[in-house]
Amino acid sequence: MEELLRICVPSELLDYFDFLYLGEFVTLNTKESGILIHLEEKNILPLGYEPLEFESKGFMNASIVQDFPLRGKAIYYSIRKRRWRHKTESNKIISRDFSFLADKTRMTADLADFLKDRGREPSRYDVEYL
Image (tube, rainbow, N blue to C red; front, side):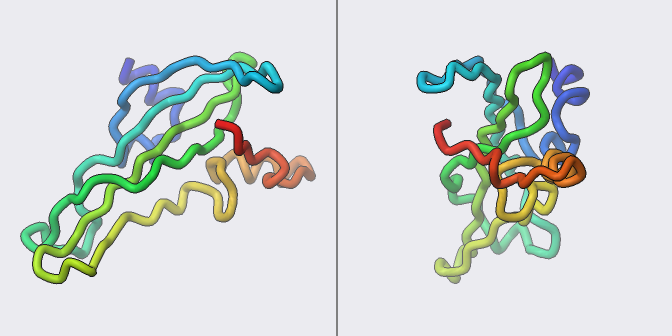
């Protein structure tokens, strides 16, 4: 399964996230079918922070991100980003910045670039019903 994911999933996702599971879905209102891949950020502190000073404090709410279709099925990732808290300054919370996700969209940067090259506005393709 890991080798198949390395072929189909953007490498940046697998560098920072662990694969949990995948499932197929069909939306009730549009009858669109697709695959939802669940990913969880690895417990690796971002560069520049001292591991002895921070501890993992769970995850942020999952975000749904769209990618290129595969064999006629929509591909979405359910991404859970991790957060870390400073051990002595509890109000200091950090998380990793994921610039490979397109800014202000809910799709990978590659898909957003592809749609822009075709004269389409990526925000038209944001999906809110997942």
